[in-house]
Length: 405
Image (cartoon, rainbow, N blue to C red; front, side, top):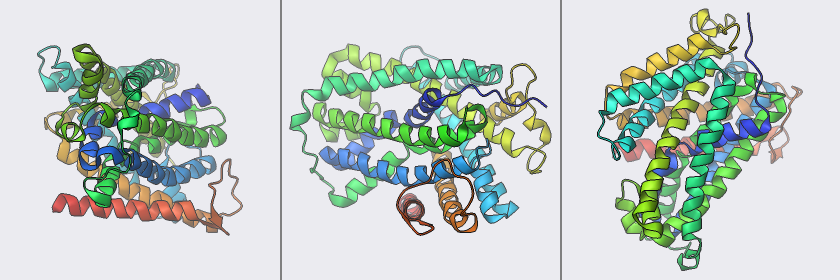
């Protein structure tokens, strides 16, 4: 049986990671976060980055021990040996991937409608179909497109940073109109703009020297996106009143409009098309790799045909098609906001399990070869994994109580 083609070095893996994290999240959450915190949105971005980094360190170490496309699934399975828990982890991850793809594809259609009057669902379906074809064609093609689209995304954020840089002095980073609670609530919102880091590990079987490359890619991606996020947040509240941002459906376009007029607003709206396209592509790639991994004959989770690799393209073409097909029904919901919220909660549960697996494997397999070891330990106890577990539980409880309330 053919294997996946190892095309990715550290630069490509980092670009994949940055693309997965940036996604369309910053285009959606910035306004709501700024509306809660004012100038202290900068602190909220930093707090969210710290929380994301705690779980990111667990992913980094575990991916160096188990450099497999199965990602979270294999970590939980190897730690606890309970098929029910590991199978639920895989199903949860797959559900998050297809629902997120549908949500972002519909967002793409929404941004496009600002330029051309188009029907949302058919356009979103065409985008999903196109990304499936690219995904099945080869990792080299999807990598080239990712590099190009991520560059455009980053350029859009850099434009916002440059437009606002001259007004940074007017921002009071300690301004917190809703107190500490507002800062924490905003960091919770911003945290969901970081969630892509957990999907980087699914590319392990297409990465050269994955035991070293993937952990570094996870951490570098979080650092790079944090710098961008903080500077964008600073520029946003410098150019536009935080109350106005809180009411804006397209906050980055509003910021660009304030700094550059209608041309800037239109440019950022156009860049959002590339951001959403790139996000759908990356979600399709990472989710299909997970499905490919957990469908291997040794697991008996899904039909083994989904783990087959195209003999010449060396891509999991059946898994790619299956993920695309699973995405399409969610487009018919029109607005998948509530379902996407549930997906975020499922992902927090997965983070709890990954951190728990990290803690358990430190004690049960202390001598396992680790290409990366998370810092801050008390003997075999990983303090970062423990903190990541606690933060994931806290965010999950906060999400449930906020939603139900």
